[in-house]
Structures are given as structure tokens and as C-alpha cells.
Amino acid sequence: MSQHHRYPMGYCVKAANDYNELNPNKEFMFCVLRMLDGASALTGSMGIPAVRFREPDQNGNMLNSHCFLNYDGRVWDPMFGLFDYGIDTYLTKICNHVELGPKQHLVLFDIQELGEEHRKNNRSQFIESSPLILLASFLVNTTNNTVTHYVG
Image (cartoon, helix red, strand yellow):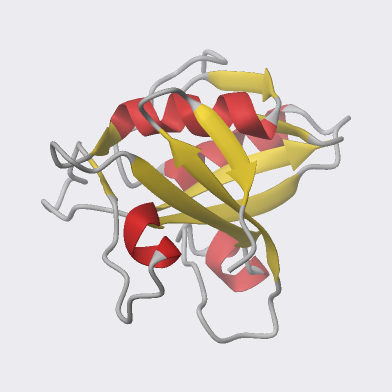
């Protein structure tokens, strides 16, 4: 399997598991992100709408979570072929794959470690209330590709 093999949408955890097996010399942390509407988050709205990937999975579902690998503070995403990026650059590149409305230009990314049971079951499950802690939140402005650390 090529290092830059493009997996179908919805197979990000499978891609990460495969890449992890092919690179035993690195101790990757499996991370999951979820994408939310940044403007709603900034106004403190209840029920913040999800931002979803443009491409549906094989069942026609539009996804707003995604798994990637972290190693030594750098991002490795075998599904999208993005390797060894800093988080800011990585998040701006992920924004190229999301569906945004004409006036929508802020994407809030919440990131947490992917639970072991979800990794084993190839599910990029973001857990709202869990013992898993939120590692970080970032706000990306897609009009000028700026990334800020978000504290809500």
C-alpha cells in the first residue's frame, strides 16, 4: 500500500491503523477532531451546528469527525495524504475538504485522543462527555487561513 493511498471517506481510522502498523518506529497518538460552526461558538449559541466534510461516506452520511495521528507535535493523516505538518497548517488544509455556506468562514476544531475501543473498531468517535479530555480547540478563519487557539 502506498504511503499516499487515498482511503474512502469514513475510513480515516482504518487508514491511521494501517499507517501505524507500517511505522512501528513512531509512537503515534490517535486523535479525533470534530468540526463545528465557529461563528455560533463565538456568540455562545446553544446547539452549535456541525461543519461537515463535502464528500459523504459510502452510506451517504456527511461526517464532521475525523481521525489523524500525532507524533512529536506533528500531524500525520494517511487518509488525506498529509504528513508531518504543524497543527495550524494541517487544519487549514482540512478546511479545503469541508462544506461551508457562503457566509460561513469560521470553523471550530475540537481535538481529543481517540478512545482505544473506537480505534480497534475503526470509528472516529468524538465523545462529548467522557473521561477523555479535550486536548485543544482551534478556530480557523478560512478567508485568511489564520488559526487561533480557542478557549470557550
